[in-house]
Amino acid sequence: MTFWEHLDELRRRLWYVLLAAVVAALGCFCFKEQLFQIVLWPKPANMQLINVELTQQFLTHMRVALWAGIIIVSPYILYQLFAFVAPGLYAMERRLALRAVGSGYLLFLAGVALNYFVIFPFTVRFLGGYQVSAEVENTITLSSYIAVLGVMSLVMGVVFELPVLCWLLAKIGVLKVSFMRHYRRHVIVVIVILAAIITPTGDPFTMTLVALPIYLLWELSILIVKRVEK
Image 1 (spheres, rainbow, N blue to C red):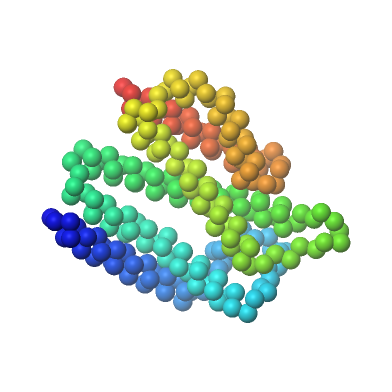
Image 2 (cartoon, helix red, strand yellow):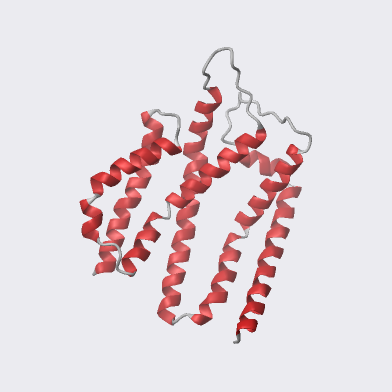
């Protein structure tokens, strides 16, 4: 295929992806009650969210529906991207790419799920009730709640990509098991600091809930890199 033929192929697949995302987003938009039951589930029952802008609720509805649609069709998006690059890869490269993309996708979902079910509920309970003074009352806006949920989900999803990243670095010969074992104690300190940043609640229990899975991912990465070196 020529360069322009590749460009036409990419454009065709991007149109497929865009159409699928729009259809899924419209479907999510129509099921407003069910969609926001899921989004607001981590919120404490006694927390009342407010809206202070005329158009904010409608725009938030559209934005959340769009992201939900993208999440729903994300396997199809990955398939289209892989189908575009696969013809230019050797058989072994296709297997490696498929393994990396599949593992990375599942790990990203695992990180998002951990945040949704465990980390964010603790965080929103702490921050929603935290006061610097009894004279300052918390009134949490809907947009603030959605933004924090989205950012924390994205951060945890990216953090959970650690084993895939280590596997790729080991494949190209950049990362060694000896290096990972030598700096294990340093990594533990970094993980604790990262857990403290992700969970501003400050209590040891919540920090452990964040730090322990990340540390286990590091140990899993060591095993993966060790296997690559054999």
